[in-house]
Image (cartoon, rainbow, N blue to C red):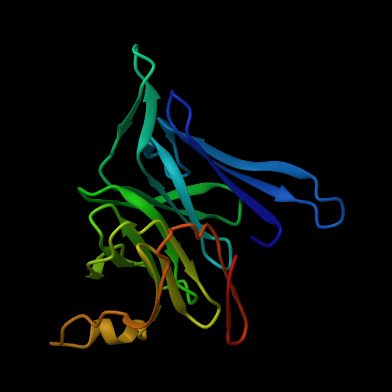
Amino acid sequence: QGDKVYVVTNPSNGSSLIVYQRNSETGQLTPLTYLHSGETDSAGKVVNLDYVQHLSVSADGQTIFIANSRTSSFTWEGEIAVTDHPMKIDAFRLNAAGTLTHLGTINGTATVEDISLSADDKTLYVALSDGSLAYYSADTLERIDAQNNLANAQRIAVSPRGELIILADALVVMRQTPLSAFYTNGGSAVAVVPTLTLSDAELDLSLIHISEPTRLALI
């Protein structure tokens, strides 16, 4: 993201969020700041991070969302055991001094499949194992609404124009409504509106690339 690189790790002793400074000429990475599970942020708050696998960063590089997901391990019989962890999303601010401040946590019962900030950085989209797409205010972390019946949602991509692309049993394209519509006094939340669905019967689509201004390329 610009001159910085953001990394999350998931070792057995807790997860970490690491930010590197990137030299624009040589590409060399220099550690800027990091926070490991159990350590304190810039405000002295202890932050616990476990099973972190997803990351989304605002365009200005200052707001960071990280999320846990499922994990796998080998049993004594040599089989793979998969554990679905309940949703835990942590928000951070990267300060001008190069330190991290924990802004809050979003919790839930389903397992996170993917997360992505909207093109305007005002909404956080969360694909969940229960077939729903939840979206939260990136400022308040409050849940705005959800889109259901998205079975096997795996990946989220957002175009610069704000279209939301979801790889599920079908490829679903949604257009985001303005965030201001969510906060009409006395009104109800307005969901993103599905505009296009492309089926992928063989489920072999592995990457979505969105190029401006009108082309959707499936790779």
